[in-house]
Image (cartoon, rainbow, N blue to C red; front, side, top):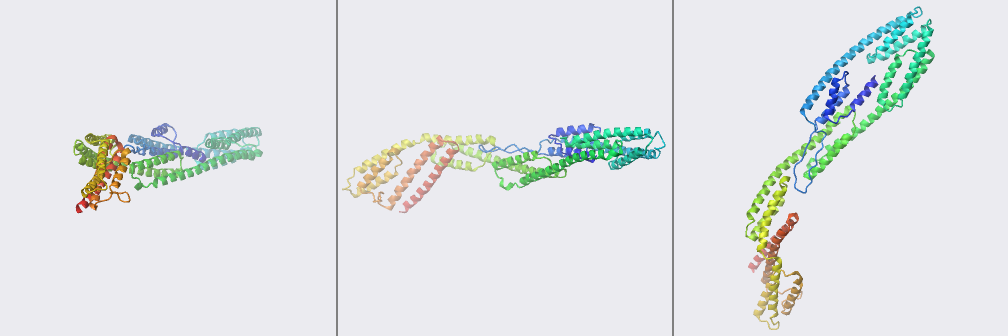
Length: 562
């Protein structure tokens, strides 16, 4: 009986319920049954219910375009209807009351049956004393034997003792009885047939695939074997040894089943402890971005999935290890919710700041102060890049608004300014005129005024901007040739300076020309290119212009000091 109860407990303990509905249906079924449910099954139902019921769900916030979206978070459960818990508690209360009442009734019945069997043993003992002198003793014995078999449920602690006492009286009855040998031999024969059949059934159980059912059936066979009368004295040991051997084989397989189950539960506990350690080792201080939270969320979901695929640990450890794992999962999703809550607040502030930049850009888009306004818009663009993300639903619209205001100004400035190609053509014309003037001087008859004029023309040449690229080298060569002819080139090929001040002036004029070229190009670049790449190019040109202006300012101060 102990093995039967143990088998049932293990089977119920390891039954898996996937939904609260399944659990409540099983409990309602138990309420309607006429027998009490095991304590282990009730505990299993309770664990399964709260495992599902107390699961939590955590989401994530918004991001800028281009960043990974937060993955949906899978949790250990999502069913959290308070009415479900109320129904669960109500059903559990009914079941426990019913179980207690059924157990009390069972114990009372077992005690009553024990008294009845004690009375039968007393009658059988008296019968043995008068068997030799009472011809009707055999019929009375058979009646007592039938009555004994019909009484089944007695306290577990009394089963073995009662069976042994009954067997002793029965065997003494048959051994003593002399007058009814014919009936005795017939009983021995029938009992042998029954016990042989029981042995065969026990031997079939040795190869059964359902080990738990085989063990339960074996216990029933043991009860049948005990309640069957004796066989001939010379066959008693043989038939018992046969039945005992089959029983030992079934019991060995049954024990091996539980040994394997215990080993598997230990391995499952080890795996679950490893998952708990991984969850508890998460360093929240190192998770600072949406991308990092997404990556950790994927990891946690994978661990939860792996947890679900691992079987039960032992009854004693399973609930404790689950509580440990759930605690670490709850902590993770609480931290994640706090992060995205703060992120949402920050994004709202960022939206306000970017909206203010849009308003400033829109106030400048119609300006005709090209240089000053371009610098202001460039500063606004730089500030824009330093502001963090805004809520995803506003990301595109707020950027389009800002970009439209900037583009409006630069497109207008582009139409007002000369194109780079037209400027290069104008520069070419100016340099050709300078070359013509240089060619008009006689290198052998240069007056002081001629030298001053040549120096001015050389300075003017340097002040003129770029010419078309394909003519750049030719024009430079022609210029150097004239300078060499007029002896205004040094040995290294560079132009001679009439004074340090002249050198500074020419350098200043060159920087001024270069700044003008960059500013012209800036307008066309902001019109023809948009998006992140265009912004980077514009930002680079603005930085270059700023550097050149600082250098030109320093040169201008030096010129004034000469």
